[in-house]
Image (cartoon, rainbow, N blue to C red; front, side):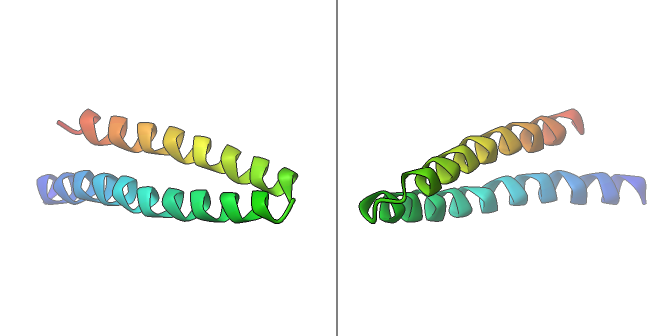
Length: 68
């Protein structure tokens, strides 16, 4: 039973990291739109969110690796 849960958690960590990539792509798109519209502080916040999403993925993939 424990092995199934660990396998599921490993798959979830990978899934979450992959899902975050699609969110990051949307952040990039809307950051560019905010910049075009002159909302530089919004664009900056979205850029920071993209950096944090990368960091989140680092932790998720480290967690996945820790299960092996």
